[in-house]
Image (tube, rainbow over all chains, first blue to last red; front, top):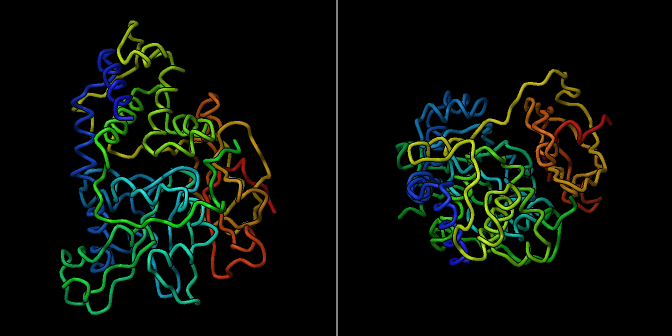
Length: 190
Length: 218
């Protein structure tokens, strides 16, 4: 694969179709600028600012833009997890993912195992991630079949009332924003 | 098309290997192919639906046995050949052998932020939306040969409209070369039992985003 990709880049560069510096900049952006820290910042803000949260749930694109993050969101919907509802996101047909707020998807999100099972056995999938939800909690699986993208707003852990936005953001894992995890507990932050 | 990419509900792919803290790209070439794909996508000859369709058109045996970014490479090569930008003998030789084709635009470093902003797929349409939130709808039992975004597991089932998303580029049309042909897009929710039978978990609901041609009143 490596040689074949290198050969293709040579051909495209020789023909003037791509600018290697532009390719470098794209790789650099996904390695260093765009990642789950953006989503974590959005979640932490929503936890401490009820008005922001209300606006975020209504029009995420606008609110994400107001944070001045690297990549612009479009057709983004934020899904709030509660005591009664757990949201979980998948793309059964390919690998649609809110990369503007989470960066590129992890390998498991793109795997045949996750794509095949998330819609038919979400509780089993969650168990493999170490998440055991009460039987009374409704699970909603969102299959990303269009250009709409979803960011899960996990529940705020108890015992964090006095925490700063920055400290709260450290509790927000990537998986908790996909819905295959929960936010970290304060006790996990030793 | 009823391809192997349409994985929802299939069995036998094993357990999920959760991971965290892994690098964004497990090898350098993965980043290069992603960047080339983004860069060539910017040229304006094809859109995301056409690229998805190219990946889905790989032979099922190839699709299932090639890595994720490996599939991107194969799909990009196929598109470059199909659009007359690169010839097969060039791919075999690993260098340019023929004069370049014309491109509407080329991505420069300065324009990279433009491809890091998610594009809008909403387009105006003259037709009024046929459904409203709360309407019961049945997904059509269709099996188009070409690209579609209606997964097999969600065909021929009754759900309800939760949201009207606006009028969006219709992938089935774009991928078939018939233009964007915007259609109304809806969030449609199904109880798990509707999709998977009476033994399904009663606390689970699944939603898809469905374009109007996928739906009929129920």
